[in-house]
Image 1 (cartoon, one colour):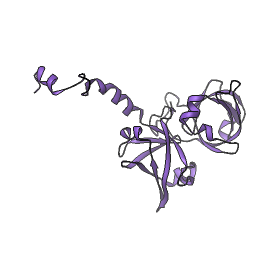
Image 2 (cartoon, one colour):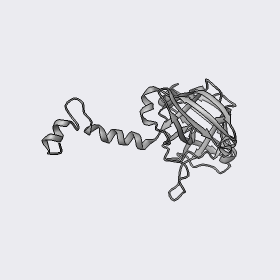
Image 3 (spheres, one colour):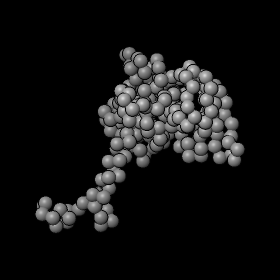
Image 4 (cartoon, helix red, strand yellow):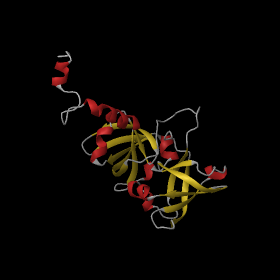
Length: 217
């Protein structure tokens, strides 16, 4: 579990296929990693939770399987690419962002990116199945960065980056057409799942007839 507060920018040092060719092993370097991470620890890379398989001062190796390569930007990485890094939340830490699982839901595309005074506005096109989870003033993680949604329309959503976020992350440097990892609010997904049994459809769930049957109408 993460909070969406980026701790450092890392650099992809190397990538190589896993022995059976179904995944990639990423080597990442960053000042944050001078404190050696334990094997098996979780590290969010652009918002995707990956497992540390090798660690040494200033550097880690992580493995990205087929699902990660298919659902995130990890398959596009090359040596020299910069990424957002966040270590897993510790029990008792302040939750400064929102609950971020590190399980990327899909990839969006930057439609607009421009300054507005001291802020920087970014508009992102979203895969249609994810739109229902995104609400105005709700939470969204873009490349692992916890942000508040300003507006939502039929294509996507917009956010504003304060100067600190512009300085500490790569988002303000993203240009039109670049892709980003997206994770919607996990609470919205759980609420939808729990509510499905009460929604009309296939004769199941909450219907006007059932309300009448039980005396509510």
